[in-house]
Amino acid sequence: MTTITVTDNEFALVRYYPETGIIHHEWKQFCSGKPFQDIMLTATRHLRDNRGTKWLSDDTNYFVLTGEDSLWGQRVWFYETIAAGWKHWAIILPALQIGKMSITEMVTQYRAAGINAKIFDNVPEAMTWLEAQ
Image (cartoon, rainbow, N blue to C red; front, top):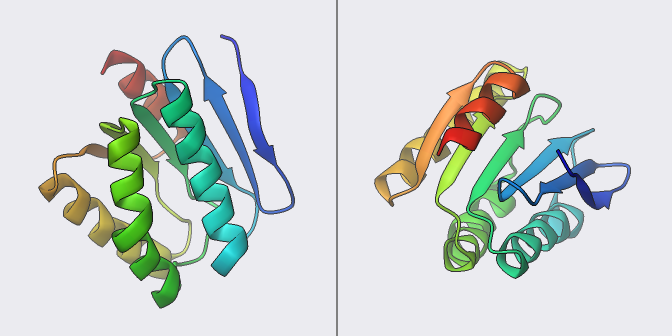
């Protein structure tokens, strides 16, 4: 499968798989504020520009969204990403319980807004599911 690296820095690796229209972010460590927002918006723009519809979030190494980033995600990122064509979301939850709770709540909200979202234990299972969507 062809892989395009969208972002690779100290915080995250973001890849795009053109054959399947999947954007895939993998957090290397926690970040918040502008670095977090820049990573997420860069991925959204790549999804839009390439007409992708699927997102794989590997949040294993992420801690928890700050209140500011959560609000920004709900008010800005979510709507921009929907407008970009996003329809399907596979999520690997953070390793820490506090992170699991916040992401699980977000999954519930996004499902209610029409995103086809599913939680997985590992990337291969998540990727297989996304490829079938």
